Image 1 (cartoon, rainbow, N blue to C red):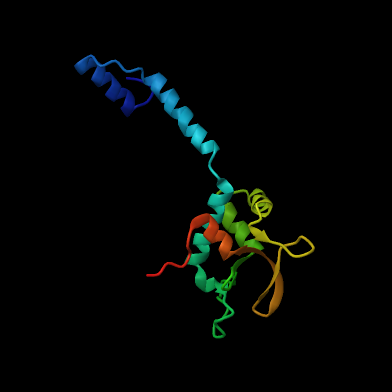
Image 2 (cartoon, rainbow, N blue to C red):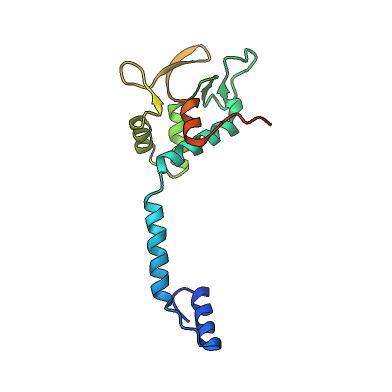
Length: 157
């Protein structure tokens, strides 16, 4: 029948029923080459940032919010801080998330930094932000950067 299962069966039936000739292997090689070309050009660091942003949105209550004085710490701990301009990720939580999503956290963060997506302090380390009264270094992404990459974040419903 052929190496491609259902596609091979369809090709054999078309050949037998209608005399239709189709070089299955040649077409599969061409399609596979196109697929591999696209996969090789995928922007994994950008996809990782979009996934991290989507995760932050879904876990919004676990981000410290300076506008909410009544916001108690979640029993599972803070994932970071979110204000009107920045989303700040606790490094250990971001590393865990990226790894769980199949990304190399070190490579992703280096690319984010190289592209200017991560805010740094004067000493080159991750920017310090206050999290529940304590100054800690976090991976800080400006909302403006997210909007440049993914479009408007705050849709008017």
